[in-house]
Length: 75
Image 1: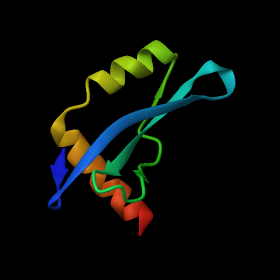
Image 2: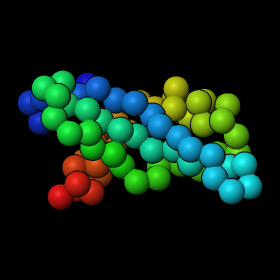
Image 3: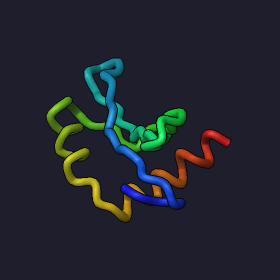
């Protein structure tokens, strides 16, 4: 993904919480090796498979907004 004149790697990360539910967020890494930027929780899913399904369905427009949220969160 390219935004703000930089190339970014994008990964969906998740973690199991109490009760077996999974929370997911998005992590961006600038291609130049700068620090990672992460969103807050973007989703809560009933299991790991559902989290993977959510992640595979993310589209460019959603990721653009998520990057803006991650940048704001880091500021």
